[in-house]
Image (cartoon, rainbow over all chains, first blue to last red; front, side, top):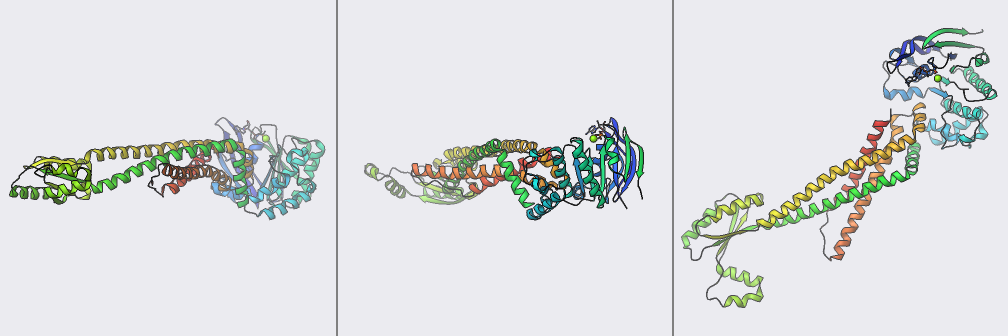
Length: 227
Length: 284
Ligand SMILES: Nc1ncnc2c1ncn2[C@@H]1O[C@H](COP(=O)(O)OP(=O)(O)O)[C@@H](O)[C@H]1O
Ligand SMILES: [Mg+2]
């Protein structure tokens, strides 16, 4: 069963240029997908359609049973609870500590503060960050910041993890660690989609699929699956 | 979630210190002015109601009217629209009333051979006719009747009081509209600032699947609080001022209890509307 399906998706921003043009593909459970292409190719736009932050100008996006044609405003939060997203700039909240940054994702959807806290600690522990729980985000290194963002994305045990240039702001050593984590997440069955213009990281994942974008169009879509 | 909403509402209130004070102070001041104006209108209106109930028309008869003319006059007046009943005040009764009212002058009156007071009819009107225009009309009708010397009705000052009351009611309504606009605008701006300063938080909440209401309720609570607190203080200050003025004048001022909850309610509703407008405009 496919988790994500793009059918002839085009997206035009301000009636000027195609950020996406006639894009079609389908991504299933457990895939590790790289979306590659130069800056401005449409990678971020593509990811934004998966969690319905953007909607296609034409065509249809279907994700986990929701379709861009029929999803209502009120349903979008419920889809988002099944998708984790991380960004180049982490998007942490600087007015609260690491633990709160993670537990907030559960608290705002009805989890009790105690449960939210417990689950946040569990996730931090799995990422080897338990000792940073009480730290404030500005006390963290780049790699640690991204790990907190990953923890926040994972705390809800999503079906899909989206990463937009996840290592764009961090040193190579930490980047390596981030990719190890993403692979581990993928190994446990989560579909992982990484958008990047840094092709050096492709080799870090062996079993992968690479979708290459150029000026909003799919240039190639290759699977590197070793049985 | 409840925890989050309350924490966030309080946190936003704290972080908006300056603007929160301005919002609350503006709500307080304007609601207080409105409350005072409403109090005045109601009080004047109250006096007016009581006085109108007592209003009557005095018809003084010419001297030495033949009995049958008096009777004809009586039945003519009785037949006029708006007239409920008529008391006849004889010269003797008029004298008695005068002596009762002004005992210090009773000697003066006794120097007259004749009783110096004319006979009169006191006309009581039907309740719906007790307003200045209709009374004026009746007075005119009666004063041209044969045998009538003079007609007196307290319409002049009632008309004046009516005008004052109408004026204050108008002022209250204008104030209510003005304060609705002014307060909701200030609260709207405050919540806008708060929301703008919390863009990152809102973005994250949106990202992790918080519903629209979870995101918005903290700011709704905030704006409502500004109006509510303003209204509450206005109610308290109005009540205290009335007590104080009453004590100073050693006069029991009339009270209108429903004003106080009304002021609080008005603050609350305006706060709610102001904050609702701001995130309807700002949030995606
Ligand atoms: N919100 C937006 N409004 C207008 N144009 C946009 C917006 N977001 C992206 N674009 C344009 O769409 C194209 C694709 O952008 P983006 O998806 O961010 O590419 P990438 O992530 O691959 O760098 C670019 O030309 C960019 O300028
Ligand atoms: Mg991008």
